[in-house]
Length: 165
Image: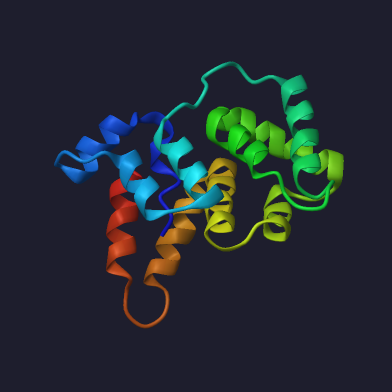
């Protein structure tokens, strides 16, 4: 599981004390256990630098175009643009940007991420997109999949119930 969701309103210190219960530096742990663009998005999320400004339609349109140019509009992917927008803008702003992206390109952000990213980085951004679009649906799907089939994924079930409080 990729820990991309619970940090939106917590400082890394608060998360560190609540979850770990002992003195550890969350960012140092992430840096030592991950690499590349995946490390960058996790560190950005753990740093809790999300804005709380009012939603700005012009900014959403501008950043939707930037995301297109950073991904599908060019050969290769400029992950730093995705990181800047997804890790620092308010969820309402990112939601509006994703809507603007779909309006501008005819494709939703999930599909763009599926096409442009891979492995853990793709899972991280898909988690963010799904949570930002609809947190209740996101948690419902996680819970459903943790209980689907033979046996229950107790770790995912417990972690999700505790995080969603």
